[in-house]
Length: 283
Image (spheres, one colour):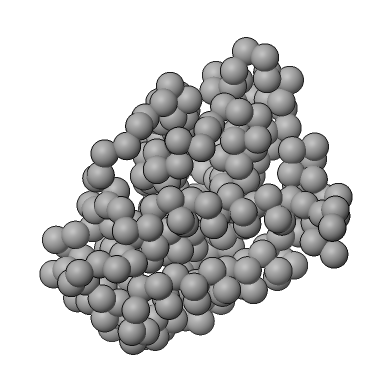
């Protein structure tokens, strides 16, 4: 049986995947008031990082200042969500705030992984369900909101030296993210010159990372890791041998379903409610 939350969630991911196909991050698109408010929410979360510097502690990883930062978000999450919702949908704020809180990592383990990223996508999916975000916000959801979310998450990961949650080490796609690789590969579909083999070329990455999410991810990996790319990011290295971006995109979607959404450790923390329901899909 397919849980309707799963069908809704995957439908949302795939709709955005179609929406960004062949488009650059820097292309022109509509930016609605809700999108601007979401950027403000993320900018607030970003500012709190600046206001919460890492503390001196013996262990290199998992800086405890993250917990201080998290408790601020925990307290303010509902108010932040309310600032984004239309006046007649305020009752949904507590439920939607759950996904925002879940989207930034775990305060006990001070880790972050694809389950947290999925909570942010679920947060955006809920905003669509209550009508705060609309069909014509698709490009802005990925290229403005999700891009800003990624930059805040990278800042958290760097500042507080967060551990990867449920990392498969060298066999995972990436320590922290998955969705920008899916949507980022879709951006490249039918690109006249850039093929999958090009993304391991640092010159290509430096030249095009502002236009393509996939390359922005590679740039972050290159900054965070040392040693040969084939060793620290084996899965991505293998992907660079795939002949076309549409094959990469399809393969990553299959991998996402199998690795992230159907594996219990990632999804055991997923919250179901009235917007993303655990009820089975009616045939």
